[in-house]
Image (cartoon, rainbow, N blue to C red; front, side):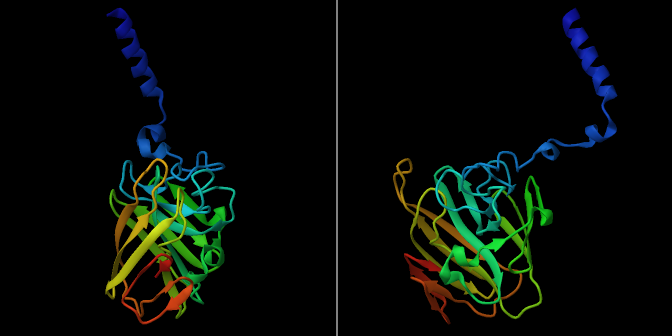
Length: 239
């Protein structure tokens, strides 16, 4: 009993000596999502996500393979923002752009340089400026929903790309489909190819809603642009 009493007393005294600022912090304030991003893996980095959430939203600077992929701090360009960074799972890459529509040319073409000087990262939030397009992107999420806010420059030609069959993380995508539900909503599915550990092809379904109505909906298939459509499906498609 005496030993326990001393421990309680010492803890109480130390607690009294803690600065007020430290006492005001919550556990999430001590989280640094950038730890180990110098040499990360696909499912290591999570910024705009919740613990054990269905959505693991964050930028990707590398999209191929399980090792040294996802967000790497030393890289200079963002290839996309994708919604699933999990063991043997990936999915739904999105990228805002302005100017010429280059989705059909792939991530090597539409990726954008960024600067850490214009980036803010904390648990549950990621903000970054896409230098190529002058777009500020902000990401956050609930347990099941990823949320994006894009601040575009003044332009008539702004796009949000869904590169549904792009290679992400552990393996390729077998096929995908997407349809325009309304001027403010699209829905679709991607089928991730089986891996040596995930032995069956795995579907990922999604719905994307926008706060502003789209003026047009189109996409691409096998590198060819498709305009004036309402739905698309295939092995190399995007919207």
